[in-house]
Image 1 (cartoon, rainbow, N blue to C red):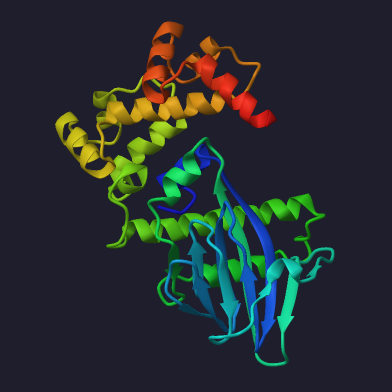
Image 2 (image 1 turned 180 degrees about the vertical axis):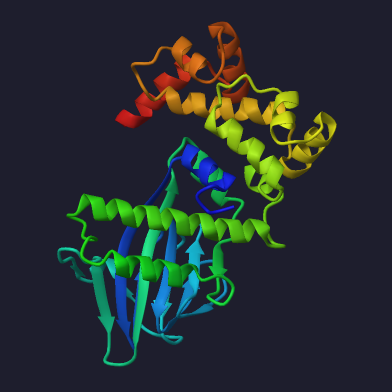
Length: 316
């Protein structure tokens, strides 16, 4: 199964995965750069050379060409060539952007060159980013000899040379797609590892048939899904599907469907033009009263109160 066809790709699309390129860093020994905390996950892919990553709450990690590190909760961190370097805040470094090229920052002395591709990831669906990143390790490292993700990125970026500048919308979109696919590959490797998750939809990805069922639910939350129907779609008996789903995800299929529908409803309520009844219909409720009751059980308040509260929060 290709990356584009994997259920994880569909699930992340439903959670509105948003990738963006931060910059290419060209660092020469001796060097030290400090990155402040962010609300997004941060990726550092070492294309050439080596550096040490020192992240808050995590052990020092040495990264070499071909290695990739994902700072899942965007903690503050330092990239340096050796312990004890004075780290300069990266925001103080000049960003050079020329037509068709990646935005680049340079820093350090006159020694060996290290090139690091820096990107960010965020799940923009209501509450999804925090819910997912709490299950991930502080720093997730993929070594080049384990998976050629960085080499794949580097080769594709080289083929796009001349189309990449921030002022080139088409090129920027291609870079985002590459980063999306890299993020999917990183998560897939972690899910399949012994350290992978044991709860939520991330846990469900460890079983191909449960993953397919999750993708169906995420793709069409308003679908008339039943445990029997989902079991048939993925080629399992009802009892086996229910048991495996609960073991992997931590809740029954019907409970997960309701939870996902309520998350989608909370997202849809941010669109003022949609009535409460229309939001309910979008997530599979033909009765407004039934939708309001389900929403209140999930969020502790009515859809209208939720909408008012979020509108007030947005205006400060």
